[in-house]
Length: 191
Image (cartoon, rainbow, N blue to C red; front, side, top):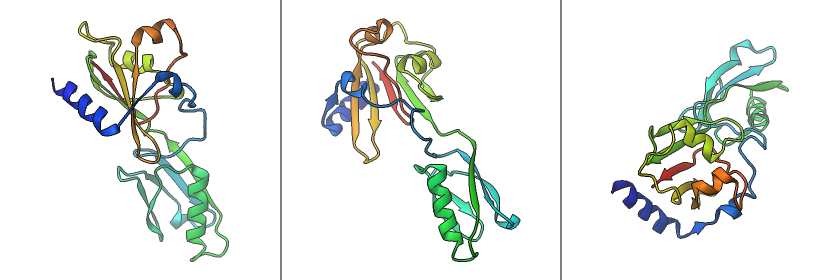
């Protein structure tokens, strides 16, 4: 009952449901350059400045703390973008800083799986994870699941929320569409 109410509220607030076919045109997670997110760990090295080199996690608020610079946003940036920004900030204090940013641990790409699955929860995903992959991580659907009512709730970079309805049989059989790729922070709701 609570999940049904959650879905109705979500559908009303998003304003629209999109088709799975339209979403298939999007790239899978891992097809483009990696963007940092909460719980990822990076190493910042400053050549010949050992005191400024550090290994830091990206905090839940998306920021990192860097010696001499302090807090700065990191979530959503590539390692190269962050490296340029740190170099620019250090140039106020150091003549021609040589900064390197290396991703040490990738921990941010996660998907929530809710509803009629055996083990609802939050699951880490790897490159090119499909809907079937995350349902398998959640132990599969229960006997009460409505296999034609799988919803993926996704928020894009602009903050616009969309709800995508999928049919599990189409995913199993590959009918009409190819595999549906989940993206980090998607919420999968099985009714």
